[in-house]
Length: 139
Image 1 (cartoon, rainbow, N blue to C red):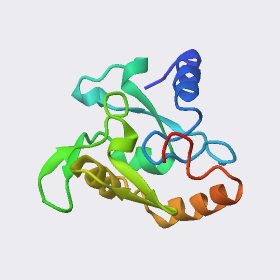
Image 2 (image 1 turned 45 degrees about the vertical axis):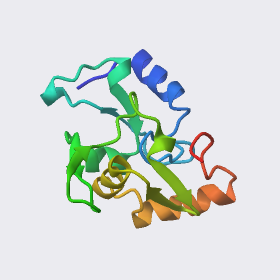
Image 3 (image 1 turned 180 degrees about the vertical axis):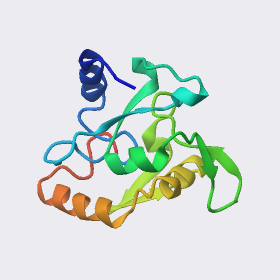
Image 4 (image 1 turned 90 degrees about the vertical axis):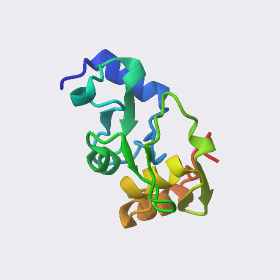
């Protein structure tokens, strides 16, 4: 679904050019980050500011139209992180370059989106060298 350029700019500015699931900086990346419909269009989600999140390509493709996933600790199906309604810091913490899920939502999102993928780890290592990891507001 096409997103007007003005709306893309607003979402990107609100996210401070960082993926709202993994925290990676869009700066220095070869590919433009996606705009994720937090509530997917197929589930009735609208293309409006309050339903869009900036997502790196990896997170966007892994999330797809999903809104829920199993918590790997309990097996219960829980809602994935909703960046407009939930605070990132309540669900995750950093252990160096590795992300740790501290709630069922955090663990399920971490697993479903593979937030500690080798690609994420490599980028975070470079981000650390550049002073951009951990991301401000994600500590």
